[in-house]
Length: 261
Image (cartoon, rainbow, N blue to C red; front, side, top):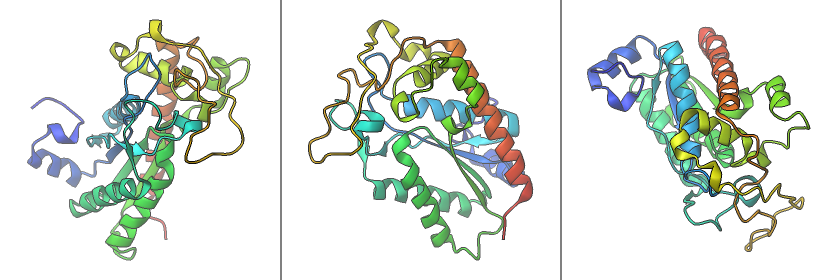
């Protein structure tokens, strides 16, 4: 067999052995969502999977197949449902998927779990899924279980953002399909990026509220909420290095402590 960190690429005896050795298991949480005219729909799958793979190789972990569908895309953070290609899950559905995967991992005697999120709208449903899993397992029967919930962009250091945005960081919500995600994709999967098709028709200027059922009109036609100008693979590597280092530090700190009472 090849030397892989991907759970689904291994036969069951090797998975069983690695889990018995205490391997942390990473669950990438993504989406199938528009990311402008210049990038593929699977950005939110590629990025958390890529970060998880890098970290797993450093800490002896395993990376599960990603959840490739995310909670409902919203206009102010992902462009919304008006773009062809975006496929949404209801928050409840997403939470139940997370719950069931965690419960299955626990049944397989996995006790170190890291969810790695790549889609802003997944945050709340992921928390709910984890809580539902703890309810289903029984909070008095977690048997040393430790779950870390990580949004990969939260690991990026302020100094790196200052380096990329010397005139000021526009904020993570407006970075959808913009410099951060485009740069990371250029580092991980340049074959899925075509900057010649990028349209800098942002940044979006959203009103401080949402409107239903008709989405707000402030989403740029390209689906890029800020800008792509200045994106590069080099910047992507800076961002990936921060995410990798931050996740490794969290894993070393939290998994060495074990469960807290």
